[in-house]
Length: 492
Image (cartoon, rainbow, N blue to C red):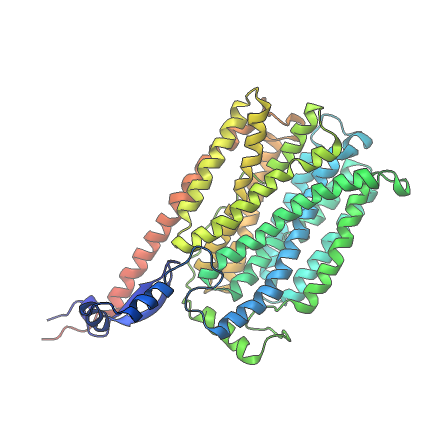
């Protein structure tokens, strides 16, 4: 008679750790013998040592050699990734800081939507450049491509200090967006080449947190320049902001060319031994990653909230220019906190859906306040600051893609870039129709906050339940195919 697959001698039974990922396999016969024995003192100590901890950097059971390898990756790969994204977000946020720091008044921008168009041209550049850039990473060494893109977009940022008309800003912002499109999906792609699934959420969170720091630093930098550089060299402080942004980018690009390790398949990093390179390749192969190819959403509706926060503060006419640049950084602090904690929680419970749902509920509350637009200034201030929770979606969704598409490098590269391009494609009509800068900050006539609230509710349900449901369906189908393939011949 046919013997059930689960009862065959030697059938493997996976042991699941607190991270939610398979760590090792043990025969069923061994487990049954172990269960008949009372636990000894040594057994208890082993069990206690393997108990998952909430805050840990390495997975339980990581060897000393692997810890050494991961330390090198964290020191060189992750450090450049964080610096790179810091500069990216610094440059991405400088236009709004300059806009509320007398650029609008100096250049004669009226009640129009010049700021929205600057963002739109930037988004178009990202849509065009993102997929092309990440596919280029599969044939060009990342340590040349990524720093090269950094130098290119930083030069266009530098040229912004000479702009005097809106059309000049539009053209340069398109070029900046085109080359900046390499930053987020490109670095996430390389991180996914080196780190295992159970290591990705925390590293992705740290990487994206560096971008939050870049956003915050942009505000502090503009505030400092307004106080100390206004009128120096015959230029306004907002023009000096673009010059300083360029100067900060140059050493980061040089650092990347020298120390970025490329990918495990083509790395020539001098700080990795040959055995460490082989182990890096083996670590990813052991994951058994298979390409699933979902279309994940990178849209959060919150990416421009800090900009609207600044415009709202300016409209109150009670804050100075340094305060208008500094106060919104509180939103970045909330963003930083949620990125830090959400990655650890997701890694330890082994699921991202519940974390996304909890954050989505808080974000829904914030957008409900924006939609109602109450008279209370303090309530709106709290909602703007708490809406910084949106940022943790980015590393969580990126970790999902790196885990699901890790077996197909080109699919993973394209999917990560497609996330950004799809997001920006939807942001453009939102930016122009629902959230034009001329209607900020209440957007009453365009019903901007209402549409944002609807989108946040959809996002909460999709990331909280939808993605895991799709994963379950795909996994169920795949499991059924494996069972059919593994069934033995009928014995009589």
